[in-house]
Image (cartoon, rainbow, N blue to C red; front, side):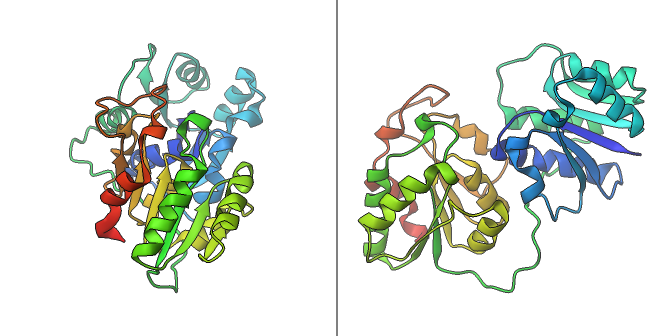
Length: 299
């Protein structure tokens, strides 16, 4: 049956969080692949390029926010199954009018809930299977390289409040290098190039490579098979985990349960702070020494 999945959250990490459920839908409907509608900022076409379960990726922005365009697209593609990881009436109604036989969605009224738990519970209900395992993997061409001694430092972030300070990253890299020599890969986007330059200039005797001027594809080629990820709760944290790299994410302004979908992400939250959520503004309460204590056995 021709299947479409709609996931409207905008970030790289958002698609990663929903990817285990997307894979289960493909596998349990005996589909070789499904189509996905998401947002351009997810960069999904770049990191799902080799995914055997996702055939086509379309972006909501390409429909010019027009219900008519989206209706015509769904109707003309003759989708029989649509899964909507979103609350609201818009997408179910468009699918219904377009003649989709089976439509599954979260419902009409949005709730404040754990997005990982919700996606998995909804998927289990839609597929009528409580034994789903939700494995998480970013599919890549088979790498010829072996595990290396590189450590990925995640300096990026969609919001300033989610980012650790440059000074603390410098201190962290120094302390790790004092324990053992490594190559450090700075993972971020074009907007982090200044921070990357500051780190490289501050630590001229340490081998540091920036990925901030590279494409997602080039960055994945570099970070694949790395030893460890340490850094902000950002897209590269989720991508590293999908590549099998053990990740330590700094959660000072986002809920740590965003990492619940994979055992590869180990959240580090500020000490003595019981609840971290959006607006906690507590990244500065996480010290480099505190992070070192959490990761020391993995270096």
